Length: 392
Image (cartoon, rainbow, N blue to C red):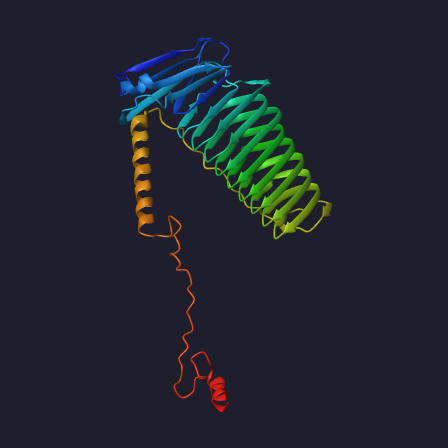
């Protein structure tokens, strides 16, 4: 608690269950580890209305910190400051999901830490999730960003007994960082324009590495690493910078205009369909299949580690349901008025113009004019016919 927020009104939610293992956030929050057996949420704000509308619930092992209910305070329009503190039992969280646009900052000992446990961190929106710790050991690790958000997983010593999975579908970023990363399998996938980073200042050590891009995204490995087998596939214009990862056997395929930089120790199988390029980092392996180019120094793209957001209040703008409905009705009325006005003016952009009425065709009678000199000459005759008639 800061000196600024100490005098603010507060709202406290104490969980009823001691078996909550998942956390779902819609607003910025600071997550702390505690020796208590049950979780609790403390919300402070300048606005009593914000506090009264702030919703926290429990459902099937998930603690939902939902924020102000959408239907609350229907006549209110305001901007307020708030700060949310979530206290969870030490090493209790197996899943954290950020669905809003704020930032979630996690203390080192809030998540599970056991080779029998799996940890999932998800940002589905434009928010940011930060986890920093000295060490962690897991069975499985999932870092997922379906959107434009960011996950910064910065643990000095990370061990994953089974599989670490990085997944991006959108324009977001995922950074798996540390000093030493030891994993049986690393699976990275990007669908869109996002970027994934697997970076260790000391070493990345894995048995199997699987990397795929569909779109214009990028996946980067650095600064030094080893693996037994690596499979890389690109569909689109993406780029994989895996030159820092020395693997015994590499299989690389590109469909499109993508680029791959890979280092193979024993064998390299290359396949391209399109204008893509596969670059093998020297020295080359004994066995090479397919067309490749050679480079001595591969490109390296590293993640700029972000500082953790300071412990300070965030801002929230409330727009009451009444005003939202009123504005919607006004917009609808204006649109209806404009369309009707446009139709009356005969504008073809808004409505179909009616065709002009047609006048039924009338027959024109043939008037016969008799020539006093010759009754056989009349207006219905052509000049040739009239001349012939005069000769009779």
